[in-house]
Length: 374
Image (cartoon, rainbow, N blue to C red; front, side, top):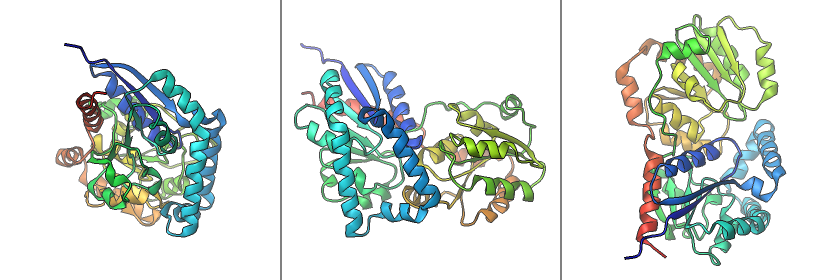
């Protein structure tokens, strides 16, 4: 009896923000722990297209979010013929930018499956799939499935929650649709709060983490100012990501509460473990990781777009707070502060989190490939 050949997996992401990239890394790390896989490859699609593509795209995205947020929401919602035309042009450009180099990579690796955590590679993959034998699995890292994700040729979509199915069109109905959750990392063991705070140079008292994601976006300065003005005897941790200008401004600002300013860091888990609550924009990965650490999340309504779907996903969770105005945040924190170290609360948050999603997705992919041997 012939043995099955080891499986080769190609993971594709795009570094626009950290969520898509982190999801890809989480899935690849999980796959490394499984048997029967001979090769695992990870590529940033923007680097495949051109080394400057990622930087330029990130700059345009951040500039639009910061200075023209209404335009971003308008573009994202795609409710007019003009927007449909813009999205069509975007698909054509993505296919043109990636096709040649991605084709070369696929010829060299000969993957059995390609796992995408961003929509950028989907247009060229549809054409390349006609020439090569591989399956396409797309993992959606936000609460909703935008039309740019929906493309012919995808074998299986992994979506965050059941309600995301409402955005599917007829093309994607041909694919398998699996409600899986958000693929977060596998580091579950929490460190003692007092030790983590000591490591970070903080007193052992109520601690709030303010984050703007990997790019340090959102009204972080105003949020920090309102919290510092309204609450006393607390710790503030402010995560600025790659936004060096923001980090410099905050470092030169005086706060009455004990405050630590951070730039971009690889291991955010320590900051989650040191905090009693996280305040930030509701990115898919960020919110899922916070709940997996057993912490309440306060979402400020800074932007629309993909984050609207994340809010819809979590709004029924009583430990997910929505601040329509940043002036409401101190009152929400006072409410959380009154709850204190409630183990029942912590257990409820963790039970509603996305723990184990990466393992479930990889197990599904491996089983599907073994059941459909070429």
